[in-house]
Length: 469
Image (tube, rainbow, N blue to C red; front, side, top):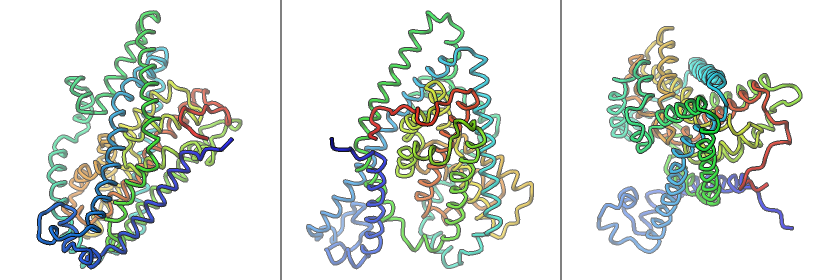
């Protein structure tokens, strides 16, 4: 019988092909290249602006434009399909998960442990980011010429983010964050995908179900479990297009990022990636090693072999919410029981943003160094506090943390316009920090399962539908 290629291997191949094509396009498609095929202004042509050059563009230019727009369409369609599933799967899985825990005391115990792990790991990531940035000092490596060029190139985008961030900063106190969790209209929260409010609704309903007689609550719980299975079938269907979609997502990003931007911000990028890699490859495995028993150890290899599909999808999509359904499947493969997966993972996709928190702390210290602003111990404590608050409120979609980054900068009096310097590399780093975000959610689920003595042994994990092993 012919052996099928595992899905995560297909995704890796597509990812590498997308990176290769993106680098080639970035290097080869210069302004002269576009002029040679009849396009006088590459940027204007791709923006569909009318001009004589566009009118004279030949078949080759039209073909290039079609391919670029086709890739963009396919990537966006894939992300929209996964995000379309995010709200119902969070609602149904959390209701079923909370109700399946049996009683309010058990729900409170598991919920308390989950939030404690979230808080500890988020704080650790922020402190690590501050420490790395203060030690390496990437702000000293950006020249004035690079600064002026980047500020000019991304000034408009930075101004829009700054305006949105200032609006958000007016309601960023801890009290307002807590108040925002409770929806005024739960149906509006569902309609507008206010995920943290959807989480609050689901936990409230699930907790209330545990207080009803079992014969009355069982029907609702079974309905939610059935709907979660329905959403999983939809996920498996959507994931069939994942390899092609990953290529379509990654190639345009690499092609348009610009190697000049990477060179100008090379040390800054290295600090961010080092911090994220330390959390993902050191902090998470150590935490898992300590939290799991010797006879059922969650080793580095076991964890990342099971997490491969979710980590690859997180990298290519830059969206925790889009990755949530696949992340839940991977957590089950690691041996985490359904009720804990259904409770911890949706909660983590909304509240547990370790990668985002670290990124915000690195950016804050980096820009302070760039502007020669000395940060006091109080300033660094303020970074920890505000980065924790805004990471909890950060939407699990591409680029959401940039707006919230303004809040952190304002808390330490760093000019918010400075984000123009780092915008050119934000999408690539967004991909990296989403991997850390989703990995932290699965790590927490494993730790909770181990603490409850319910983690399945190595080799006993269930292969989910659609896992082509």
